Amino acid sequence: MSIREKLIHYQNQSEENFQQKKNLTNTFHYIIAFSIFMASSMAAGITMPFRILSKKLSKSKPKERIVQLNKDNKEQVLKAHKLILLDFWAEWCGPCIMMNPVIKEFTEKNEEVIIAKVNADLYPSIVKEFKVRGLPTFVLVKNGQEINRHAGPMTVKDMERFCQEG
Image (cartoon, rainbow, N blue to C red; front, side):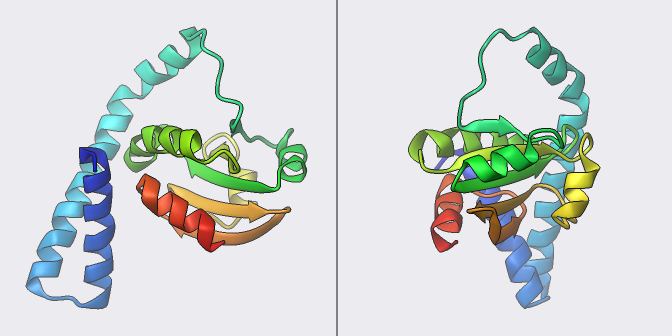
């Protein structure tokens, strides 16, 4: 398990434990997890201009199974593919940026799932349509119908389990 996956797992487990039982240990771990979240968001904000510039200058072709969803292609993408994992994200969101390598690894291992990334800042109408309240949020759509939803980062194994449950 990579460091990134360990951090994601720690954050998710800390939040789950804190929601189940609010004691001193769980509160401490929740505060640490929240601090990691804040640090990753600050890092994402600081590096955002460089990432945007890098994407603009990059000549590499995006993967076919990772689609940038927008209001113009939304209906076409949702109808054209049987199983789609919508990834609601933003450039300033640390956990969202942390998910990029996880999503890339997931797509390499799972050819039956198309990833449709929705930039929440650029397409708030899609965010509103899917009732997304936090980032990152993942919505699994099968044959045009939502079948599963997860808020927060995931590991590759979590994503695989999430898609199989749907």
